[in-house]
Image (cartoon, rainbow, N blue to C red):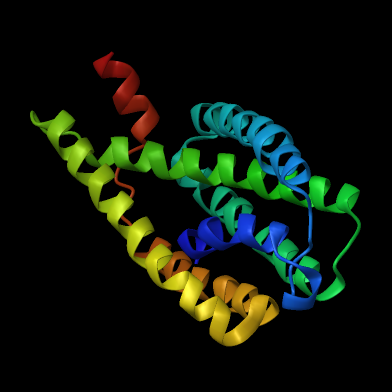
Length: 185
C-alpha cells in the first residue's frame, strides 16, 4: 500500500478537481512534500531512532508500524473532502512524520537481520528486495487509480497495509537489535 501511495500522492495533489485531485500549484506541492513533508520525515526519523534506542525495536515495532500506515487515512479524507491547502500542508506533514518513524523501524529491522559475517551483503540484498517491493506496486498504481478514482484508490492503499502488519505477528525477536548492534560498534 505504501509504495502505491508514494507514487500517486503527488499526482493527487496536482490533479484537477474535476478529476478528483486537489488542484494545488507546483509551488504548493513543493511546500507540502518538499519542505514541510521533508522536514517532518527527517524529524520522524530522528525521533524514531531515539525511540528504538530507548525502548528497543520489539516494543516499538507496532507503534511505529501504525505511525507509518494510519496517516494513509489522511489521503482518504483529502480525496473525499478536498480541504484547503493549509490542511493539506498539515496532513502531508503528519503523514511524512509517520513515514519517518515507520521507515526507521524497518531500517533497524534490516540491520537486525544482517548479523552474519556477510552482514554488509545481507543488508544490501535486503535493501534491494525492499526497493523491488516498492517498485512493482508503484508500476501498477497509476492504472489502479485511473480505474477506481482517488477516493477508492486511497481506501485500497489503506487495506493493502493490513497484510504487512499481519506479518509482524510472525517476526521473531530473539534479542533486541539495538543491544547487539551497539556491542559490535
